[in-house]
Length: 305
Image (cartoon, rainbow, N blue to C red; front, side, top):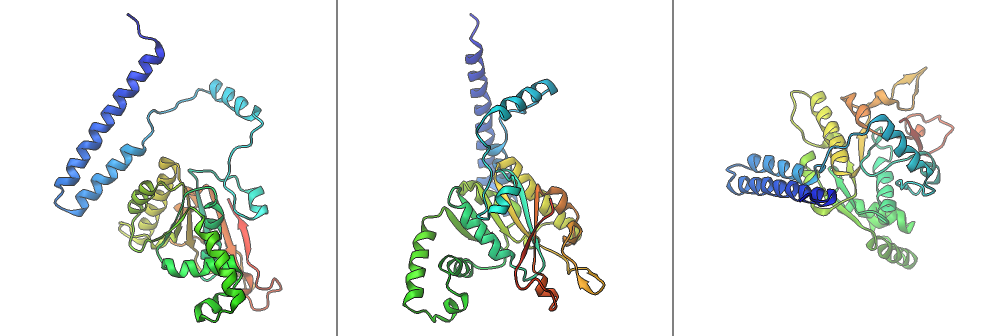
């Protein structure tokens, strides 16, 4: 008796799943008997890898790749890309789940505020986790409510709110409560900690504020930041999660005494960051570094990759 090809594929898939389940159960036994947290963490990492690993490796020859391209582009349906709540960015960026997107900026350039605005927009459609290694969830919520309600943050901090402010904040609270958004107090979390929680919570998009604060092993700062960048890149690709990471830049270089907008070489401590990113966005506020600037207090969003 010759089994149909589809039946054979089904049973092969069952065997693969059974083998993976056996390995997962083995790692669970290691976790249960672990003598140290490091041993348990390593087993959890291996288990996460088993849960998110691809069931098969896809290899396309050139002819099949060309055929697939024609089939995809012939479709009238536009691929699904992340939207940012800014029409110009939506036109220029073709970000997808599984991409690593970096937002770089000098200190006090407004990276955190921009990122929580992105989180708010994305959480209308996706499950979003905002991992903050620098700012507590309460302060982030204050900024977000100020943005949503158009109530100055200073009035919220001082509790100097009138009836109109309370009405706007009540409306903003209802809007925020409807979003699929979690704020994670991520101080001290490693890349693998972030990955484990992201998988557990089934996040589709995560934001990390900010990259250089993630603890990582390495003989020096360059190696540590390189490992962090590579870890976030692998997390995005292997788990199919869009990772939006904030990154601090070195102080601006000057030309003829004037500060210059950031470039790819502005990333602190490691050139690997620019290599791992699918998209790089810089936030630059000229007035902050040049009091004589004619650009006012507005921030510029610069797309470098």
